[in-house]
Amino acid sequence: MTSNNDPQGGRVELVIRQERAEDHEAVRAVHTQAFGDGERVPALVDALRIAPASLASLSLVATIGDRVVGHVMLSACRLDALPRLVDVLSLSPLGVLPEFQRQGIGTRLVAHALAGAENRGVPLVFLEGSPHYYGERGFTDATKLGFRPPTLRYVPGAFQVAKLSSYEEWMTGTFVYSDAFWALDCVGLRGEQLKQLQLRSEVDATRA
Image (cartoon, rainbow, N blue to C red; front, side, top):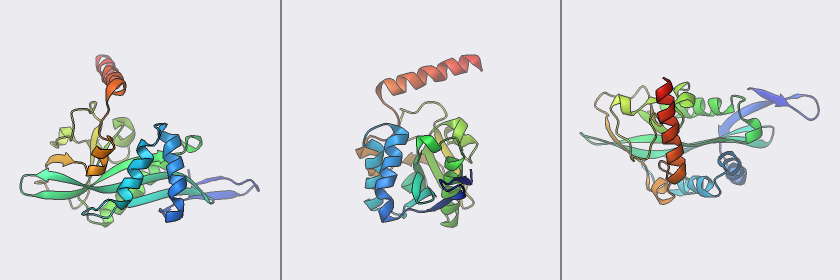
């Protein structure tokens, strides 16, 4: 999607830009509605904005007119490779207001985020998410490429990575989230959510 109807009858272009301080409340509303998970995801964004990090975060918003309709964040994490620690990025969270979903806004946010990581010379971008959705947007099952996940609470295929042009073959090892993800329990799934997704994966496997 590149444009939307304007109340005056014209067309309003979708714009992807850097988040500004005045966007913070709108970004909070995006994730509150997109995830339906109370304060956890908005609190993660707030924590990542101010956390000390080896790499600066990249926070992008999608706007239609003067309304923020989507948001994506890249933040610093590390890969524990044998020769040394490698500074990498995590793509999390990605959210779009429910009424604007399935219109390509998330796809454009992911593309801009990966381009931003590429421009900074970052070798790898990791995430936890749907293998179908992100597999069509530049990501691959990280476990199959030899990377080790930070938790056992991932369903098959959820641990994913995008290799960028500065990646080198020796860069393999365990992905380590920054403290904010652990403090807010935003790594993997727990309880019924994990059980349901594991069961769904088992059912899908029998149908394959």
